[in-house]
Length: 302
Length: 284
Image 1 (tube, rainbow over the protein chains, first blue to last red):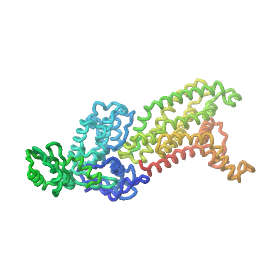
Image 2 (image 1 turned 30 degrees about the vertical axis):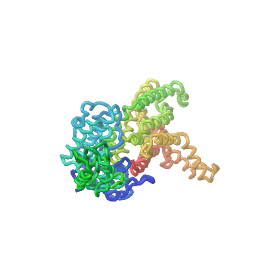
Image 3 (image 1 turned 180 degrees about the horizontal axis):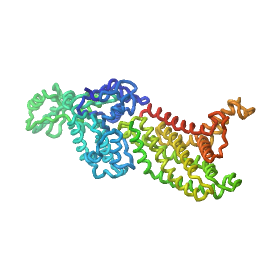
Protein backbone atom coordinates (compact mmCIF):
# COMPACT_ATOMS: atom_id res chain seq x y z
CA UNK A 1 0.00 0.00 0.00
CA UNK A 2 1.11 3.54 -0.60
CA UNK A 3 1.55 5.68 2.50
CA UNK A 4 1.38 8.87 0.47
CA UNK A 5 -0.31 9.26 -2.94
CA UNK A 6 -0.42 12.56 -4.77
CA UNK A 7 -2.07 12.67 -8.12
CA UNK A 8 -1.98 15.71 -10.36
CA UNK A 9 -1.82 18.17 -7.48
CA UNK A 10 -1.96 21.83 -8.44
CA UNK A 11 -1.61 24.83 -6.16
CA UNK A 12 -1.12 28.49 -6.98
CA UNK A 13 -0.51 31.43 -4.71
CA UNK A 14 -1.59 34.44 -6.71
CA UNK A 15 0.46 34.32 -9.91
CA UNK A 16 2.93 31.81 -8.53
CA UNK A 17 2.28 28.21 -9.51
CA UNK A 18 3.78 26.38 -6.54
CA UNK A 19 2.70 22.88 -7.60
CA UNK A 20 2.17 22.02 -11.26
CA UNK A 21 0.49 18.67 -11.42
CA UNK A 22 2.61 16.88 -8.85
CA UNK A 23 2.44 13.07 -8.83
CA UNK A 24 4.13 11.21 -6.00
CA UNK A 25 3.91 7.75 -4.41
CA UNK A 26 5.63 6.84 -1.18
CA UNK A 27 5.45 3.18 -0.23
CA UNK A 28 4.58 1.83 3.19
CA UNK A 29 7.63 1.42 5.39
CA UNK A 30 10.19 3.21 3.24
CA UNK A 31 12.35 6.20 4.08
CA UNK A 32 11.71 8.73 1.37
CA UNK A 33 13.85 11.81 0.91
CA UNK A 34 12.09 14.74 -0.72
CA UNK A 35 14.67 16.99 -2.30
CA UNK A 36 14.65 20.29 -4.03
CA UNK A 37 16.06 23.76 -3.86
CA UNK A 38 14.34 26.37 -1.71
CA UNK A 39 11.13 27.49 -3.31
CA UNK A 40 10.68 24.35 -5.41
CA UNK A 41 7.45 23.37 -3.65
CA UNK A 42 8.63 21.06 -0.87
CA UNK A 43 6.85 22.82 1.97
CA UNK A 44 3.75 23.39 -0.14
CA UNK A 45 3.62 19.64 -0.76
CA UNK A 46 3.97 18.86 2.94
CA UNK A 47 1.37 21.51 3.83
CA UNK A 48 -1.05 19.84 1.44
CA UNK A 49 -0.45 16.46 3.11
CA UNK A 50 -1.33 17.98 6.48
CA UNK A 51 -4.32 19.99 5.20
CA UNK A 52 -2.61 23.25 6.17
CA UNK A 53 -3.34 24.39 2.64
CA UNK A 54 -5.85 23.10 0.12
CA UNK A 55 -4.86 22.19 -3.42
CA UNK A 56 -6.61 23.76 -6.39
CA UNK A 57 -6.76 20.42 -8.19
CA UNK A 58 -5.67 16.82 -7.87
CA UNK A 59 -6.07 14.19 -5.20
CA UNK A 60 -4.05 13.73 -2.02
CA UNK A 61 -4.25 10.55 0.01
CA UNK A 62 -2.26 9.84 3.15
CA UNK A 63 -2.31 6.42 4.84
CA UNK A 64 -5.14 5.47 2.51
CA UNK A 65 -7.36 8.42 3.51
CA UNK A 66 -8.26 11.69 1.89
CA UNK A 67 -5.95 14.37 3.24
CA UNK A 68 -8.73 16.97 3.31
CA UNK A 69 -11.85 15.10 4.41
CA UNK A 70 -10.11 12.78 6.87
CA UNK A 71 -7.35 15.10 7.99
CA UNK A 72 -7.82 14.49 11.71
CA UNK A 73 -7.72 10.71 11.19
CA UNK A 74 -4.54 11.13 9.12
CA UNK A 75 -2.91 13.26 11.79
CA UNK A 76 -3.87 10.77 14.50
CA UNK A 77 -1.50 8.29 12.87
CA UNK A 78 1.13 10.75 11.70
CA UNK A 79 3.96 12.46 13.55
CA UNK A 80 4.95 15.83 12.12
CA UNK A 81 7.97 18.03 12.48
CA UNK A 82 6.77 21.17 10.70
CA UNK A 83 8.98 23.81 9.17
CA UNK A 84 8.95 27.40 10.43
CA UNK A 85 7.00 26.50 13.54
CA UNK A 86 7.28 28.04 16.99
CA UNK A 87 6.87 26.63 20.50
CA UNK A 88 4.76 28.00 23.35
CA UNK A 89 7.19 30.18 25.25
CA UNK A 90 5.44 29.88 28.60
CA UNK A 91 4.96 26.10 28.57
CA UNK A 92 7.63 23.64 29.68
CA UNK A 93 9.02 20.88 27.48
CA UNK A 94 7.02 18.34 29.46
CA UNK A 95 3.79 20.34 28.99
CA UNK A 96 4.39 20.44 25.24
CA UNK A 97 4.72 16.69 25.03
CA UNK A 98 1.76 16.22 27.38
CA UNK A 99 -0.31 18.42 25.06
CA UNK A 100 0.62 16.19 22.12
CA UNK A 101 -0.33 13.13 24.19
CA UNK A 102 -3.70 14.66 25.14
CA UNK A 103 -4.41 15.74 21.56
CA UNK A 104 -3.63 12.29 20.19
CA UNK A 105 -5.42 10.52 23.01
CA UNK A 106 -2.25 8.46 23.55
CA UNK A 107 -1.14 7.01 26.88
CA UNK A 108 2.57 7.79 26.58
CA UNK A 109 4.66 9.22 29.38
CA UNK A 110 6.39 12.47 28.33
CA UNK A 111 9.68 11.69 30.04
CA UNK A 112 10.97 8.76 27.92
CA UNK A 113 10.13 10.71 24.76
CA UNK A 114 12.09 13.71 25.98
CA UNK A 115 14.93 11.35 26.86
CA UNK A 116 14.97 9.96 23.32
CA UNK A 117 15.49 13.40 21.83
CA UNK A 118 18.04 14.42 24.46
CA UNK A 119 15.87 16.86 26.40
CA UNK A 120 15.45 14.83 29.61
CA UNK A 121 17.27 17.37 31.72
CA UNK A 122 15.25 20.26 30.30
CA UNK A 123 11.84 18.66 30.84
CA UNK A 124 10.80 21.24 33.43
CA UNK A 125 12.18 24.28 31.61
CA UNK A 126 9.99 26.70 29.71
CA UNK A 127 10.47 26.33 25.97
CA UNK A 128 10.79 30.09 25.49
CA UNK A 129 14.43 29.82 26.55
CA UNK A 130 15.25 26.99 24.12
CA UNK A 131 17.68 27.28 21.22
CA UNK A 132 16.52 26.48 17.68
CA UNK A 133 18.02 23.02 17.97
CA UNK A 134 16.23 22.34 21.24
CA UNK A 135 12.92 23.53 19.78
CA UNK A 136 13.50 21.15 16.90
CA UNK A 137 14.13 18.28 19.31
CA UNK A 138 11.03 19.19 21.31
CA UNK A 139 8.86 19.14 18.19
CA UNK A 140 10.39 15.78 17.29
CA UNK A 141 9.45 14.39 20.71
CA UNK A 142 5.89 15.62 20.09
CA UNK A 143 5.94 13.98 16.66
CA UNK A 144 6.93 10.63 18.16
CA UNK A 145 3.95 10.57 20.56
CA UNK A 146 1.63 7.63 19.99
CA UNK A 147 4.08 5.64 17.86
CA UNK A 148 2.97 7.08 14.49
CA UNK A 149 2.73 5.02 11.30
CA UNK A 150 4.09 7.92 9.28
CA UNK A 151 6.65 10.55 10.16
CA UNK A 152 6.65 13.75 8.12
CA UNK A 153 9.76 15.83 8.73
CA UNK A 154 10.07 19.19 6.97
CA UNK A 155 13.72 20.28 6.80
CA UNK A 156 14.41 18.43 10.06
CA UNK A 157 18.10 19.16 10.36
CA UNK A 158 17.85 22.92 10.04
CA UNK A 159 19.07 24.37 13.31
CA UNK A 160 20.67 21.14 14.47
CA UNK A 161 24.41 20.86 15.06
CA UNK A 162 26.22 17.86 13.51
CA UNK A 163 25.71 15.88 16.69
CA UNK A 164 22.00 16.65 16.70
CA UNK A 165 21.74 15.75 13.02
CA UNK A 166 23.36 12.37 13.73
CA UNK A 167 20.97 11.71 16.62
CA UNK A 168 18.06 12.66 14.41
CA UNK A 169 19.26 10.17 11.81
CA UNK A 170 19.47 7.43 14.44
CA UNK A 171 15.93 8.16 15.62
CA UNK A 172 14.63 8.12 12.05
CA UNK A 173 16.39 4.82 11.34
CA UNK A 174 15.06 3.22 14.51
CA UNK A 175 11.51 4.32 13.70
CA UNK A 176 11.86 3.01 10.17
CA UNK A 177 13.16 -0.32 11.49
CA UNK A 178 9.85 -0.63 13.38
CA UNK A 179 7.98 -0.24 10.10
CA UNK A 180 7.26 3.48 10.26
CA UNK A 181 7.17 5.25 6.91
CA UNK A 182 9.39 8.32 6.95
CA UNK A 183 8.95 11.21 4.54
CA UNK A 184 11.37 14.03 4.91
CA UNK A 185 12.34 17.05 2.93
CA UNK A 186 15.69 18.71 2.56
CA UNK A 187 17.52 21.03 0.24
CA UNK A 188 20.81 19.30 1.02
CA UNK A 189 21.37 15.95 -0.65
CA UNK A 190 24.10 14.85 1.75
CA UNK A 191 21.55 14.67 4.56
CA UNK A 192 19.28 12.20 2.85
CA UNK A 193 21.92 10.06 1.15
CA UNK A 194 22.81 8.02 4.22
CA UNK A 195 19.27 7.16 5.32
CA UNK A 196 16.95 7.18 2.34
CA UNK A 197 15.67 4.16 0.49
CA UNK A 198 14.53 6.42 -2.31
CA UNK A 199 14.64 10.08 -3.11
CA UNK A 200 12.34 12.28 -5.12
CA UNK A 201 13.57 15.52 -6.62
CA UNK A 202 11.16 18.39 -7.08
CA UNK A 203 11.79 21.40 -9.27
CA UNK A 204 9.42 24.26 -9.94
CA UNK A 205 6.46 22.34 -8.60
CA UNK A 206 7.06 19.17 -10.57
CA UNK A 207 8.72 15.90 -9.68
CA UNK A 208 11.72 15.54 -11.98
CA UNK A 209 13.14 12.26 -10.67
CA UNK A 210 12.31 9.45 -8.25
CA UNK A 211 14.89 6.76 -7.67
CA UNK A 212 17.48 5.28 -5.32
CA UNK A 213 20.70 7.26 -4.98
CA UNK A 214 22.50 4.65 -7.15
CA UNK A 215 19.75 4.81 -9.72
CA UNK A 216 20.02 8.58 -9.95
CA UNK A 217 23.77 8.29 -10.36
CA UNK A 218 23.44 5.83 -13.24
CA UNK A 219 20.71 7.83 -14.80
CA UNK A 220 22.68 11.04 -14.96
CA UNK A 221 25.53 8.99 -16.49
CA UNK A 222 28.99 10.27 -17.53
CA UNK A 223 29.24 11.04 -13.92
CA UNK A 224 32.66 9.62 -13.13
CA UNK A 225 35.96 11.41 -13.38
CA UNK A 226 39.24 9.79 -14.32
CA UNK A 227 42.24 11.28 -12.55
CA UNK A 228 45.55 10.58 -14.35
CA UNK A 229 49.02 11.40 -13.06
CA UNK A 230 51.70 11.78 -15.78
CA UNK A 231 55.40 12.82 -15.88
CA UNK A 232 54.60 15.73 -18.15
CA UNK A 233 51.46 16.71 -19.99
CA UNK A 234 51.91 16.46 -23.77
CA UNK A 235 51.05 19.51 -25.80
CA UNK A 236 47.55 19.36 -27.23
CA UNK A 237 46.59 16.53 -24.85
CA UNK A 238 43.45 18.22 -23.60
CA UNK A 239 42.26 18.91 -27.12
CA UNK A 240 43.01 15.40 -28.34
CA UNK A 241 41.29 13.76 -25.36
CA UNK A 242 38.19 15.88 -25.80
CA UNK A 243 37.84 14.72 -29.36
CA UNK A 244 37.37 11.17 -28.11
CA UNK A 245 33.82 9.89 -28.08
CA UNK A 246 32.41 9.85 -24.56
CA UNK A 247 34.76 12.39 -23.03
CA UNK A 248 32.94 15.48 -21.88
CA UNK A 249 35.52 17.52 -20.03
CA UNK A 250 39.29 17.67 -19.46
CA UNK A 251 41.13 19.88 -17.01
CA UNK A 252 44.88 20.06 -16.49
CA UNK A 253 46.48 20.97 -13.19
CA UNK A 254 50.30 20.66 -13.25
CA UNK A 255 50.95 17.01 -14.09
CA UNK A 256 47.42 15.90 -13.17
CA UNK A 257 44.66 15.48 -15.72
CA UNK A 258 41.02 15.21 -14.69
CA UNK A 259 38.94 13.62 -17.41
CA UNK A 260 35.16 13.46 -17.10
CA UNK A 261 34.01 10.57 -19.26
CA UNK A 262 31.79 7.54 -19.58
CA UNK A 263 33.06 4.38 -17.91
CA UNK A 264 33.87 2.44 -21.12
CA UNK A 265 36.19 5.05 -22.58
CA UNK A 266 38.49 5.31 -19.57
CA UNK A 267 41.08 2.90 -20.98
CA UNK A 268 40.93 4.60 -24.40
CA UNK A 269 41.71 7.89 -22.70
CA UNK A 270 44.70 6.43 -20.89
CA UNK A 271 46.12 4.78 -24.03
CA UNK A 272 45.57 8.00 -25.98
CA UNK A 273 47.76 9.79 -23.44
CA UNK A 274 50.45 7.14 -23.79
CA UNK A 275 50.29 7.40 -27.57
CA UNK A 276 50.99 11.11 -27.19
CA UNK A 277 54.17 10.21 -25.31
CA UNK A 278 53.11 10.73 -21.73
CA UNK A 279 54.32 8.36 -19.04
CA UNK A 280 51.29 7.49 -16.86
CA UNK A 281 52.45 6.95 -13.30
CA UNK A 282 49.05 6.58 -11.62
CA UNK A 283 45.35 6.75 -12.35
CA UNK A 284 42.15 6.50 -10.35
CA UNK A 285 38.41 7.07 -10.70
CA UNK A 286 36.29 9.52 -8.74
CA UNK A 287 32.54 9.27 -8.60
CA UNK A 288 30.63 12.41 -9.32
CA UNK A 289 29.92 14.29 -6.09
CA UNK A 290 26.27 13.97 -5.11
CA UNK A 291 25.89 17.71 -5.13
CA UNK A 292 26.70 17.72 -8.86
CA UNK A 293 24.13 15.01 -9.36
CA UNK A 294 21.55 17.06 -7.51
CA UNK A 295 22.49 20.14 -9.50
CA UNK A 296 22.10 18.16 -12.71
CA UNK A 297 18.45 17.58 -11.86
CA UNK A 298 17.57 20.84 -10.25
CA UNK A 299 19.29 23.08 -12.74
CA UNK A 300 17.98 21.18 -15.73
CA UNK A 301 21.25 20.01 -17.22
CA UNK A 302 20.34 16.38 -17.70
CA UNK B 1 -12.90 15.76 19.88
CA UNK B 2 -9.73 17.20 21.34
CA UNK B 3 -10.97 20.71 22.13
CA UNK B 4 -10.44 19.94 25.81
CA UNK B 5 -6.74 19.36 25.18
CA UNK B 6 -6.54 22.64 23.25
CA UNK B 7 -8.46 24.49 25.97
CA UNK B 8 -6.26 23.14 28.74
CA UNK B 9 -3.08 23.94 26.87
CA UNK B 10 -4.33 27.41 26.04
CA UNK B 11 -5.40 28.12 29.61
CA UNK B 12 -2.01 27.07 31.00
CA UNK B 13 -0.24 29.18 28.41
CA UNK B 14 -2.34 32.34 28.70
CA UNK B 15 -2.71 32.32 32.48
CA UNK B 16 1.06 32.78 32.76
CA UNK B 17 1.15 35.95 30.71
CA UNK B 18 2.23 39.12 32.46
CA UNK B 19 -0.51 41.02 30.73
CA UNK B 20 -3.07 38.93 32.56
CA UNK B 21 -1.52 39.73 35.95
CA UNK B 22 -1.62 43.42 35.13
CA UNK B 23 -5.23 43.18 33.97
CA UNK B 24 -6.26 41.28 37.08
CA UNK B 25 -4.69 43.91 39.28
CA UNK B 26 -6.38 46.67 37.32
CA UNK B 27 -9.71 44.96 37.54
CA UNK B 28 -9.32 44.43 41.27
CA UNK B 29 -8.57 48.11 41.78
CA UNK B 30 -11.47 49.01 39.54
CA UNK B 31 -13.90 46.73 41.32
CA UNK B 32 -12.96 47.93 44.80
CA UNK B 33 -12.73 51.55 43.70
CA UNK B 34 -16.05 51.53 41.90
CA UNK B 35 -17.77 49.98 44.91
CA UNK B 36 -16.29 52.70 47.09
CA UNK B 37 -17.18 55.45 44.68
CA UNK B 38 -20.78 54.35 44.30
CA UNK B 39 -21.45 53.87 48.01
CA UNK B 40 -19.49 56.70 49.57
CA UNK B 41 -19.07 59.50 47.12
CA UNK B 42 -21.70 59.42 44.45
CA UNK B 43 -24.61 57.21 45.52
CA UNK B 44 -27.39 56.75 42.96
CA UNK B 45 -30.31 59.11 43.23
CA UNK B 46 -32.67 56.60 44.79
CA UNK B 47 -30.21 56.23 47.65
CA UNK B 48 -30.43 59.93 48.33
CA UNK B 49 -34.18 59.51 48.31
CA UNK B 50 -34.35 56.50 50.62
CA UNK B 51 -31.14 57.23 52.45
CA UNK B 52 -29.91 53.66 51.97
CA UNK B 53 -27.38 52.19 49.58
CA UNK B 54 -28.59 48.70 48.79
CA UNK B 55 -26.84 46.08 46.69
CA UNK B 56 -29.35 46.64 43.90
CA UNK B 57 -28.52 50.30 43.73
CA UNK B 58 -24.84 49.55 43.93
CA UNK B 59 -25.07 47.14 41.03
CA UNK B 60 -27.10 49.63 39.01
CA UNK B 61 -24.22 52.01 39.49
CA UNK B 62 -21.53 49.43 38.74
CA UNK B 63 -22.97 47.90 35.62
CA UNK B 64 -22.35 50.85 33.35
CA UNK B 65 -18.69 50.80 34.40
CA UNK B 66 -18.23 47.04 34.01
CA UNK B 67 -19.88 47.31 30.61
CA UNK B 68 -16.80 49.24 29.51
CA UNK B 69 -14.13 47.54 31.53
CA UNK B 70 -15.00 43.89 30.89
CA UNK B 71 -14.83 44.12 27.07
CA UNK B 72 -11.41 45.75 27.30
CA UNK B 73 -10.09 42.97 29.57
CA UNK B 74 -11.62 40.29 27.34
CA UNK B 75 -10.18 41.76 24.14
CA UNK B 76 -6.75 41.99 25.72
CA UNK B 77 -6.97 38.36 26.83
CA UNK B 78 -8.15 36.96 23.52
CA UNK B 79 -7.07 39.04 20.52
CA UNK B 80 -3.85 37.07 20.05
CA UNK B 81 -5.52 33.69 20.62
CA UNK B 82 -5.44 32.53 17.00
CA UNK B 83 -3.83 35.32 15.01
CA UNK B 84 -0.87 35.29 17.41
CA UNK B 85 -0.32 31.57 16.88
CA UNK B 86 -0.51 32.13 13.15
CA UNK B 87 2.03 34.93 13.32
CA UNK B 88 4.52 32.96 15.38
CA UNK B 89 4.04 29.61 13.66
CA UNK B 90 2.94 27.69 16.75
CA UNK B 91 -0.35 27.10 14.94
CA UNK B 92 1.56 24.63 12.76
CA UNK B 93 2.48 22.68 15.87
CA UNK B 94 -1.12 22.84 17.06
CA UNK B 95 -2.56 21.63 13.74
CA UNK B 96 0.11 18.99 13.18
CA UNK B 97 -1.57 17.20 16.05
CA UNK B 98 -4.96 15.61 15.43
CA UNK B 99 -6.89 18.75 16.36
CA UNK B 100 -9.56 19.82 13.91
CA UNK B 101 -9.93 23.51 13.24
CA UNK B 102 -13.22 23.41 15.11
CA UNK B 103 -11.38 21.92 18.11
CA UNK B 104 -8.94 24.80 17.88
CA UNK B 105 -11.59 27.54 17.78
CA UNK B 106 -13.69 25.97 20.56
CA UNK B 107 -10.64 25.16 22.65
CA UNK B 108 -9.42 28.72 22.33
CA UNK B 109 -12.81 30.10 23.34
CA UNK B 110 -13.03 27.84 26.39
CA UNK B 111 -9.38 28.35 27.39
CA UNK B 112 -9.50 32.14 27.15
CA UNK B 113 -12.91 32.20 28.86
CA UNK B 114 -11.29 30.34 31.74
CA UNK B 115 -8.51 32.89 31.87
CA UNK B 116 -10.83 35.89 31.92
CA UNK B 117 -13.01 34.13 34.50
CA UNK B 118 -10.01 33.87 36.83
CA UNK B 119 -9.19 37.55 36.38
CA UNK B 120 -12.79 38.65 36.99
CA UNK B 121 -13.19 36.26 39.90
CA UNK B 122 -10.21 37.72 41.72
CA UNK B 123 -11.35 41.28 41.03
CA UNK B 124 -14.95 40.70 42.06
CA UNK B 125 -13.88 38.77 45.17
CA UNK B 126 -12.10 41.87 46.38
CA UNK B 127 -15.03 44.01 45.27
CA UNK B 128 -17.47 41.95 47.31
CA UNK B 129 -15.48 42.55 50.47
CA UNK B 130 -15.47 46.29 49.87
CA UNK B 131 -19.16 46.27 48.97
CA UNK B 132 -20.11 44.20 52.01
CA UNK B 133 -18.34 46.58 54.30
CA UNK B 134 -19.79 49.74 52.72
CA UNK B 135 -23.32 48.97 51.54
CA UNK B 136 -26.06 49.56 54.09
CA UNK B 137 -28.08 46.54 53.12
CA UNK B 138 -25.77 44.00 51.53
CA UNK B 139 -27.20 41.01 49.74
CA UNK B 140 -24.55 38.46 48.69
CA UNK B 141 -26.96 36.63 46.39
CA UNK B 142 -27.59 39.68 44.24
CA UNK B 143 -23.90 40.41 44.05
CA UNK B 144 -23.06 36.82 43.08
CA UNK B 145 -25.71 36.89 40.37
CA UNK B 146 -24.25 40.14 39.10
CA UNK B 147 -20.81 38.50 38.96
CA UNK B 148 -22.28 35.56 37.05
CA UNK B 149 -23.92 37.75 34.43
CA UNK B 150 -20.74 39.80 34.13
CA UNK B 151 -18.83 36.58 33.45
CA UNK B 152 -21.32 35.75 30.71
CA UNK B 153 -20.75 39.20 29.25
CA UNK B 154 -16.98 38.59 29.37
CA UNK B 155 -17.50 35.31 27.47
CA UNK B 156 -19.46 37.28 24.86
CA UNK B 157 -16.45 39.48 24.21
CA UNK B 158 -14.10 36.49 24.34
CA UNK B 159 -16.24 34.86 21.64
CA UNK B 160 -16.30 38.02 19.54
CA UNK B 161 -12.53 38.47 19.89
CA UNK B 162 -11.68 34.80 19.24
CA UNK B 163 -13.96 35.00 16.21
CA UNK B 164 -12.11 38.06 14.91
CA UNK B 165 -8.76 36.45 15.72
CA UNK B 166 -9.76 33.35 13.73
CA UNK B 167 -11.00 35.50 10.88
CA UNK B 168 -7.87 37.57 10.29
CA UNK B 169 -4.34 36.44 9.62
CA UNK B 170 -2.42 39.01 11.62
CA UNK B 171 -2.32 40.00 15.26
CA UNK B 172 -2.59 43.70 14.60
CA UNK B 173 -5.67 43.28 12.43
CA UNK B 174 -7.23 41.11 15.14
CA UNK B 175 -6.57 43.83 17.71
CA UNK B 176 -7.98 46.62 15.54
CA UNK B 177 -10.95 44.50 14.53
CA UNK B 178 -11.94 43.49 18.04
CA UNK B 179 -11.41 46.95 19.46
CA UNK B 180 -13.30 48.51 16.56
CA UNK B 181 -16.29 46.28 17.26
CA UNK B 182 -16.14 47.27 20.92
CA UNK B 183 -16.23 50.96 19.97
CA UNK B 184 -19.20 50.31 17.70
CA UNK B 185 -21.12 48.48 20.41
CA UNK B 186 -20.23 50.93 23.12
CA UNK B 187 -20.50 54.29 21.42
CA UNK B 188 -21.98 54.06 17.96
CA UNK B 189 -24.66 51.42 18.17
CA UNK B 190 -27.50 53.62 19.37
CA UNK B 191 -26.71 56.21 16.70
CA UNK B 192 -26.72 53.45 14.10
CA UNK B 193 -30.02 52.14 15.42
CA UNK B 194 -31.42 55.66 15.21
CA UNK B 195 -30.03 56.00 11.72
CA UNK B 196 -31.76 52.83 10.60
CA UNK B 197 -35.03 53.97 12.13
CA UNK B 198 -34.58 57.34 10.44
CA UNK B 199 -33.97 55.70 7.07
CA UNK B 200 -36.84 53.24 7.39
CA UNK B 201 -39.15 56.07 8.30
CA UNK B 202 -38.43 57.77 4.99
CA UNK B 203 -35.41 59.74 6.19
CA UNK B 204 -37.22 61.60 8.89
CA UNK B 205 -37.92 61.25 12.59
CA UNK B 206 -41.38 62.68 12.19
CA UNK B 207 -44.32 60.67 13.27
CA UNK B 208 -42.40 57.93 15.07
CA UNK B 209 -44.35 57.08 18.17
CA UNK B 210 -44.02 54.54 20.88
CA UNK B 211 -45.73 51.34 19.85
CA UNK B 212 -45.54 51.68 16.07
CA UNK B 213 -43.43 49.41 13.87
CA UNK B 214 -40.52 51.76 13.33
CA UNK B 215 -40.21 52.43 17.02
CA UNK B 216 -40.22 48.71 17.78
CA UNK B 217 -37.57 48.15 15.15
CA UNK B 218 -35.48 50.78 16.87
CA UNK B 219 -35.96 49.06 20.21
CA UNK B 220 -35.02 45.64 18.81
CA UNK B 221 -31.91 47.07 17.20
CA UNK B 222 -31.00 48.73 20.46
CA UNK B 223 -31.16 45.55 22.47
CA UNK B 224 -29.21 43.60 19.83
CA UNK B 225 -26.16 45.50 21.05
CA UNK B 226 -24.37 43.07 23.41
CA UNK B 227 -23.47 45.86 25.80
CA UNK B 228 -27.08 47.01 26.07
CA UNK B 229 -28.15 43.38 26.43
CA UNK B 230 -25.76 42.94 29.34
CA UNK B 231 -27.00 46.02 31.17
CA UNK B 232 -30.60 45.14 30.57
CA UNK B 233 -30.15 41.51 31.56
CA UNK B 234 -28.35 42.42 34.75
CA UNK B 235 -30.97 44.91 35.84
CA UNK B 236 -33.76 42.49 35.05
CA UNK B 237 -32.32 39.71 37.20
CA UNK B 238 -31.23 41.92 40.04
CA UNK B 239 -34.58 43.69 40.21
CA UNK B 240 -36.42 40.38 40.21
CA UNK B 241 -34.26 39.17 43.07
CA UNK B 242 -34.83 42.35 44.99
CA UNK B 243 -38.51 41.93 44.12
CA UNK B 244 -38.93 45.54 43.20
CA UNK B 245 -39.48 44.54 39.62
CA UNK B 246 -41.75 46.63 37.50
CA UNK B 247 -43.15 43.79 35.50
CA UNK B 248 -43.79 44.46 31.85
CA UNK B 249 -45.94 41.56 30.74
CA UNK B 250 -47.61 43.32 27.85
CA UNK B 251 -44.52 43.88 25.73
CA UNK B 252 -43.44 41.60 22.91
CA UNK B 253 -40.90 38.93 23.91
CA UNK B 254 -37.99 40.71 22.23
CA UNK B 255 -38.66 43.79 24.32
CA UNK B 256 -38.66 41.92 27.63
CA UNK B 257 -35.55 42.43 29.70
CA UNK B 258 -34.70 38.72 29.77
CA UNK B 259 -34.27 38.86 26.01
CA UNK B 260 -30.84 40.32 26.80
CA UNK B 261 -29.69 36.79 27.65
CA UNK B 262 -30.79 35.45 24.29
CA UNK B 263 -28.89 38.31 22.66
CA UNK B 264 -25.75 37.50 24.65
CA UNK B 265 -26.01 33.81 23.71
CA UNK B 266 -26.28 34.83 20.05
CA UNK B 267 -23.23 37.04 20.41
CA UNK B 268 -21.28 34.01 21.63
CA UNK B 269 -22.41 31.61 18.90
CA UNK B 270 -22.48 33.85 15.84
CA UNK B 271 -18.96 35.38 16.02
CA UNK B 272 -17.44 31.96 16.74
CA UNK B 273 -19.32 30.46 13.81
CA UNK B 274 -18.23 33.22 11.42
CA UNK B 275 -14.61 33.10 12.60
CA UNK B 276 -14.56 29.32 12.37
CA UNK B 277 -16.06 29.24 8.87
CA UNK B 278 -13.41 31.59 7.56
CA UNK B 279 -10.58 29.84 9.47
CA UNK B 280 -11.72 26.42 8.24
CA UNK B 281 -11.63 27.47 4.60
CA UNK B 282 -8.33 29.35 4.63
CA UNK B 283 -4.76 28.24 3.95
CA UNK B 284 -2.40 28.63 6.86
